[in-house]
Amino acid sequence: MLFNNLTIVVLTDRNDLDEQLYSTFSKSSDLLGEEPKRANKRKLSDEDKLANVGCKDNSKVKHGLFDLLNGRESGGVIFTTIQKFKPEDGEIPVLTDRKNER
Image (cartoon, rainbow, N blue to C red; front, side, top):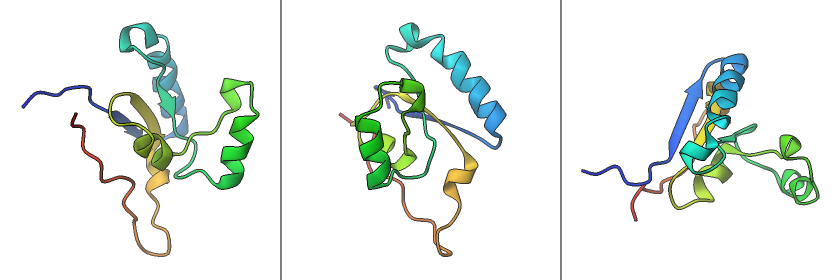
């Protein structure tokens, strides 16, 4: 099996480690072929999406893990923390059911 254009999710248990790894990978965006993304939330609300539209400062744009995974066919590096997987009402909903296939 070939791993063609994988989407890599780097999952940590601490915000400081998440920030450190994201910063390190961001310095290598030329090598990666794109800027890595950092999921600030599990899923963006409609309000968050509207705020992103008018935001000119990329450091203030919010990304939801659900949105990042489902908003791309494949590829990319996404950083997030385990807290984004906290059950909602006792259940853990599926973030995505897509495949890394072309």
